[in-house]
Image (cartoon, rainbow, N blue to C red):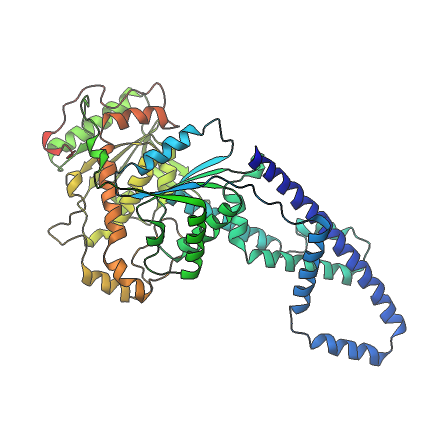
Amino acid sequence: MEMEDYHAKMYIWENSREKERRRLLVEEAQDKQRDGVWIDEKRGFLDKLVSRRRRSSIEPGVGKWVSYLNREKKLDKLVGQRPIAPVAPKGLYLYGNVGSGKTMLMDMFYGATEGVIKHRRRFHFHEAMLEIHDHMHDVWKRRDDDKSVQSSSFSWISSLPFDAKIKEWLIGEEKYKQETQQKHILLAVADKFLVDRQANKTGASILCFDEIQTIDVFAVVALSGILSRLLSTGTVLVATSNKAPEDLNQDGMQRDIFLELLSKLDENCNKILVGTEKDYRRLIPTEGSSQNHYFCPVTPDTRSMYEAMWHDITNEIGGNIISVTIPVMFGRSIEIPQSCNGVARFDFEYLCGRPVGAADYIAIAKNYHTIFISEIPAMSMKIRDKARRFITLIDELYNHHCRLVCLAASPIDDLFQGTEEGPLFDLESFQFEADAEGTKLRRDVLAEGNVGLRPSTSGLVAILSGQEEMFAFRRAISRLVEMQTPLYLERVQRAHPSFQLQAPSVGSNNRACVSQSAPSV
């Protein structure tokens, strides 16, 4: 209740401040119009010439900046300072090895807050970054729209009883205020990140953030600015990561900005090492599993069983197999070649061999509870970009509680071990890619248009160690193992929003599994 009172006070304070700001502008405009008439009538030519020269000697922009600051100081006296956020309880920052239970603990906490905390959000890293991009796009779009004099932001000026020159001055002051605020775009994005005022929500109290990473400069700057803002306004953060906060930015990107984030995390979160090397996903019981969902290697027998499972499921849900197009963020769309009542089928190249990314995978995961993927190869340096996309795909299918049926060339534990063509990591290839013009060691596969810069020389050693990539590979293997267990498959039917209650469980026909392709658990 205390947090909701704070957000209500903020809403009143912001509206009062905007009303007073416009009133002050109108008063200044009245003074200028009155002074302008006196100058025209009383002053001689020489006086006006001297006045113009004095004005021309002033550095461009300084006058507007001084006016803006003076106006802000007056508003502080008239409306009062920004309401102070209530003291929030400390959040949690859980970090540790793959499969140690970090995400499970966070989700247990998030589930326990349902019905207790009104405003709360849960994000995975990819989803959060995409939403940040979306909000930034909206802010920039409004900025471009506001360049027009006919913008709704300036409509209140048109009805004022001033001449054209004074109205032009008012519009200039409004534009300057907006441009000044645009310089702090991350603050505006942070205020929208957890709040959708169009949906009549007045704030968010808890942010659960899974898999915090700093994969490039944009991630460092965006997360630092947004998380710092949210923590400063009373949001409780519960986060997971594979690294302690101080180890997140080993590349040294935007160090000063990153240190501010560390300070906020230290002040607002308890850091807890989930200190076990054991992958608990591999200990999930597999008894009672009536069917295999991971077929390998690719042989006539495994392909036949994979095809039979597809036909069994689509026949049982009684739908026609069709091709459809579904919307993706940023006004994009993706075609689903084979779709049937919540079930979709792809091959590896279609999902991971093209310039698609997390936005596409999230759209697929939200629309389909069961995903078939065939022709999954063993990963090597030769297809490392495809391997990264595949890992992002697995992350999103797992986060959205999707069921996955695979036809792959290798058992799960051997997918990222390299091939006869070469290993997955090769230092010479990494160095060559670092020197190539316009390339990035960690190509951003979130969405087209993401910001990312080449790594600094000081951070090259950390990147060459492959720590981030190796952790991602281990996480993908661990999740693939869990996605074959009865416990996970049961959760799909309960948790996936698009799952049709009338659809039977995969494996209802008790088809025998292929013994050589069973995952190592």
